[in-house]
Image (cartoon, rainbow, N blue to C red):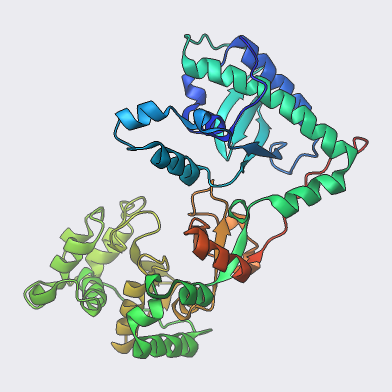
Amino acid sequence: MMKQTTFYAPQICIVRDSIKPEDKLISQEAYLTLLEIYEALSIVKPGNNDNNRTLWLEVERGPTEVFGDYREYKRDGEVTSRAEFVQLWKDYYPEDTMWYEFSTREYMGEKFFFLDNKLIARTGTEYTANPLPSPLLDLFGQFTAWLLERIRREMNKLTGDPSAYNTYIRNNLPYKKRYGKINRTKLWELLGDEANRFDKNLGQETVRKLVDFVRNTTGQKPQPYSEMTADTFFRICEIGYDANDYFGDQKASLSPREKYISRADGRDAGLSKIEGDSAEEFNKWYHSGHVMGAHPWEICRGGNSTHISLYVFSKDGNWHLSLDGSSSARLEETVRMAIALYENGIKFELRDADRIVRKVTGSDYIGIVPDNIIPVYCHASFPKEDLICDFLNLDFEPELAEKIVPLVTWYPLVEIIPVKGQG
């Protein structure tokens, strides 16, 4: 196999998006090269987790011929002229260079290789793959050969002048590859009519009621219920349902139990079937052991973070209620429920009440994550004290992104440091 001395951004993207370890697209030569790559990168001081090491690669976008064959694009109807083809190329690769994050980790004797946070290869102590010939096999072999030489050059730069090396990255790494935070109100104002404004959607009066409720209940534990029945729980759920007008004209014709069955998760461990007005039956059901692993409290079904729950739990012989639904997807519904429950004298705790107020009033921050990371469940990437729970990529239109950048507080980049004695 002839080694390719230059790789361009479109080829890197193919490797990142198409190579999967389970496809075993590693020849024995590529396997040995990966081991050399891991060794070459060992000059970098590892992080705290699994000897993780990270390197930034700035790669030229290359000529249009690397992007694709104009005749094929025209034949397939994707473009009608060469000018359209060139514009498509620039849409995909708007800058002269693209940046990619390459990292390695080691765990239980295996070495793992990531490109833009995507696992592209893993190697054990012995070569075991027996791949069939394919274009991707050849491409990955060429990529590993190119990558080894590139990493060696980067390590020479790093050890030659670590300060200059990191300064270049700090001055040139695109903002869309960085972590930052932006005040929600500032983002709302910049987005204008495109912003999903919780405050305007809920209305000034509702926001005021929310703020007053949280202020009046902060630091106070709600009084528990001495007994609980299924019907009591369903009636409390109904208050929240009706506050959001889930059932429209059918509101009066449906019973609280029917409303619960319609909106809840369904995996209720038999709650919807027990005798409604019996505290003894509810207590028996609750302590039966069937509730564990079920979802009786998911009163508005959704995904892992897009549901609303009204938890009931027993403590010291009493019953306690807790409303939970702070995700942005269900925030407005949760606020209406909380206010309705409060105004109807229901004794409950609103989980993450302060967070909900900050989100509704726009006083919190939204975390910005690199474009190669899906902007969900990124809490661990931000300081706990910043209380960030929503995330986004900086993938807006270029003109809008340029306006957003100055409003962002950008976190310092993690410096790439050579191990002691290398720099």
